[in-house]
Image (cartoon, rainbow, N blue to C red; front, top):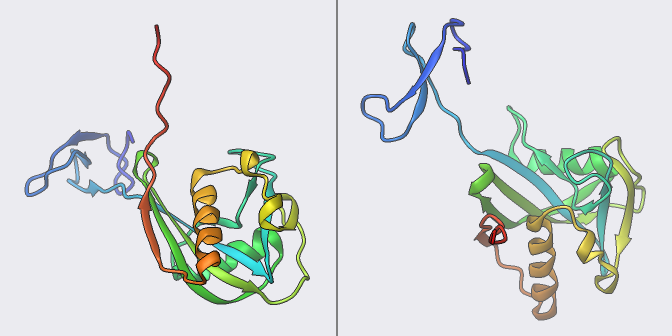
Length: 183
């Protein structure tokens, strides 16, 4: 950030009085610009024993499979965001949403929240952000072609929980990938 969104003057990074973190502060109007994590909301849409996945038509990870999800918008609840993203990416309608995984991804300042949800019907199709949308049995999940680790983790939890028919809310954190050592 270089300029204040309130008055247009330059900002500097410093710890404001009464705070403990570096923030962008306007030297002119003294506005403190807080930058907080983004929330990604989505669904794990289920039809019988199958799960609905979308193949991404956009970056990042174009061509890889994901659960329908995206950034929460101002003015909506997290459940509304998950329903909206499912409709946008998979043209699918869902019901009986239950919060399922809440996964912190602090190294990219995001929180991913997925709801288990039932598909209302089989009337789904690829939305603008998807190349294709398809139902998968567990044995057919394209594990090596999943777009995001949060999606893989949510699916792993789902299949493990489905075996015991118990679906607790899962709260986890995903660390950054370790980089290979340079020798």
